[in-house]
Amino acid sequence: MGLLSIIRKIKRKEKEMRLLMVGLDNSGKTTIVLKINGEDTSVISPTLGFNIKTITYQKYFLDWPRGNSSYRYTLNIWDVGGQKTIRSYWRNYFEQTDGLVWVVDSSDLRRLDDCKIELDNLLKQERLSGASLLILANKQDIKGALTPEEIAKVLNLEAMDRTRHWKIVGCSAYTGEGLLEGFDWLVQDIASRIYVLD
Image (cartoon, rainbow, N blue to C red):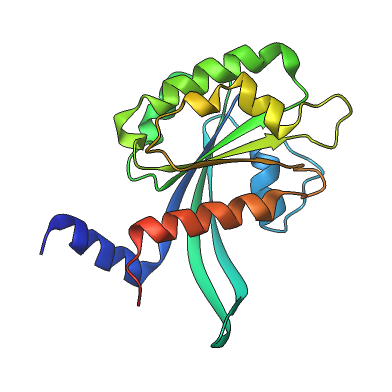
């Protein structure tokens, strides 16, 4: 029995996923984490360092022809600050990351080049090479925000390594729109890679 199969068996029992949420400062990372956990988002201050939130994620679906089914996972979300002075410390959080959530402020047009550079640097990290990538094009509720397709073009996502699993989803941390769609995809993609079928 190889190391990978041992890890898969352990992960199957625990049904845990480690998600790293990063992006430039003021992109809405903390608001997203609070929103999907059903917490108050009215007063949020910049994240200096990191926050860890553990969320039980359960999804019900129709398992045709057997009837209804569900899956349940524990998500350990590491929400790391995005200020320029903190970005060099992001590498301290890469270990054992199953999924990477990159949050983009779709309305901050002047910093999209910085956003692309930082994402490109992240994707070069060997410890993140197997992680599924969810790009959340946040702040879609703001007038003048770029669409997910426009963000994908700016970030040059089509040129990404073909082995990387990725998806871009438009969302609003304020209204919650798009968040479940994005996290549903991420959880299912990670599960298909690291959990053996029961």
